[in-house]
Image (cartoon, rainbow, N blue to C red):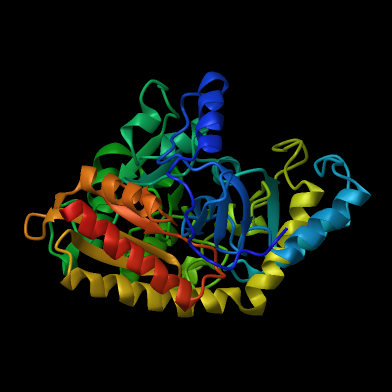
Amino acid sequence: MPMITTIPDLKTALPGPKARAIIERDAKVVSTSYTRDYPLVMARGEGCAVEDVDGNIFLDCSAGIAVTATGHSHPEVVQAIVEQAHKFLHMSGTDFYYEAQVRLGEELAAIAPMQGSKRSFFGNSGTEANEAALKLAKYYTKRDNVIAFFGAFHGRTMGSLSLTASKITQRKGFGPLLQGTYHAPYADCYRCPLGYRPENCAAECLNFIEDQLFVHLVSPDEVAAVMVEPIQGEGGYIVPPNVFLERLREITTKYGILLIADEVQSGMGRSGKMFAVEHVGIEPDIVTVAKGIASGMPLGVATARAEIMSWPPGTHASTFGGNPVSCVASLATIRLLRDGLVKNAATVGAHLLAGAKALMDKHQLIGDVRGRGLMIGIELVRDRQTKERATTERDAVVRECFKRGLLVLGAGRNAIRFSPPLVLTKQLADIALEILDQALTAVRR
């Protein structure tokens, strides 16, 4: 197929006739629980470009929700997938052995942000990785309770959903959820959930755990783990100050509580380091990854210190987890990340972040710009003084970007997330900023 050279390049009204026909068919047979922000019907992808079924070309700054880390259909990843597919597609790694899973375990042991020996459990998604981490923490500590944070998104299966506290629609109608789950405020210092000034926000949010939860609701010696996103994803791409994670590590160590870093969205190079916790320098006990780990193939992994992941056979397993095709895709992905894409995420991410902050002078609708690497959130407000959330305006900006050939998604109630493939160039970042500028102007008018 011909290479995509012009990005974006719109040829029809959106959605085009072929896209409309597929959307109509979808409405009859696909679950109504899916959220579709705009009518994109993909036909193929290449790098940071997405082509729809009508031949329209879009600049992708969503990466399939931060998944296609190496870009769409990177030739080295595709080659690894094809070669493995010719050998065998499946031979469940929970009952048998194959080298691809072993090699991936070795790679993850080498890059996971903890010292010492490590082991990995392989699942199919981020929520499965977090379920494994949750079960492991309870099994290892022999404690029943877990703490997470408001704004967190850890998945939609029942255990991880119990820790999720992002949007009420994700929890409504599914109770009762997992008992023994408690939530604390996350250090969103732009709008401190406890009403403190930015310089005090992080400390007070953590004081809530010791001064409130441990005094009134749960004894610390009955808490198995604290699960935290080093950068909140669905909660609004919120980057807490380093002291938040530093003190959280101190608190968990003090009480013998395991610290689980949910790096499903922030990991695998997206933040400009392989793992977002590396910006802070703390070491979790367990780290979970998915999304970008295999460039689009289904894979979720919980990696823990070896002494923690010592549960006996049959304690936890997955028929399809660590599928050999997904494993080789992940090995190719990690190689590409090491060979330059993590560094590119840091360099181009800094360029994109600076460009987004520069738009604040022109658009009063932008209240805050934050991020690390190519994980950038732009929070929209109706008034910078009151910080009233611009919810409908955010949705309108996302749609206006789509109309102009830029794919972005919302995060939280009123933020826009930029999570492009890590192959994004500065030139493409400038195009994205230009389209965002146009979309903000259109919504303002």
